[in-house]
Length: 186
Image (cartoon, rainbow, N blue to C red; front, side, top):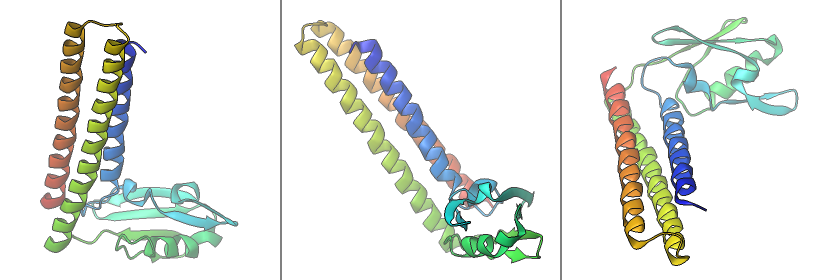
């Protein structure tokens, strides 16, 4: 494997780590209605368990209200039950046609808890980035040991990998700061 391949692989995996953190953050409730809040909810439908968005349409009615229009009305009760049991602290209202889900304002205690959860998600992502750096540096050492690159190239490549790592961690920290602001703003 060449240095270019090592660097490209690290950049690709770094991008995936950032996207994974964004997805984790989208599932954290911030007091504002967002369809991503219901992404992790699974519903039992005709003997199989499927994501909520495969049995109905999830929409944002206003800043504090989500609505779920289930395509098969016989699944309304199952969808309502799945939302209640999701652990998100939501209380859906079923009118027989549409399930409306009011998003209650967050208590200060819940905001602090969400901030800690966001911090844990970010720390996990940072560990992933550091593992990517370790893998890339190992690849560079193998190139040096195989005499495919010089010692000067090794130092330069290691510096570039460290720079990529620093940029990745900075991006993760910025995402965390944005999420914390979002949690405490509402």
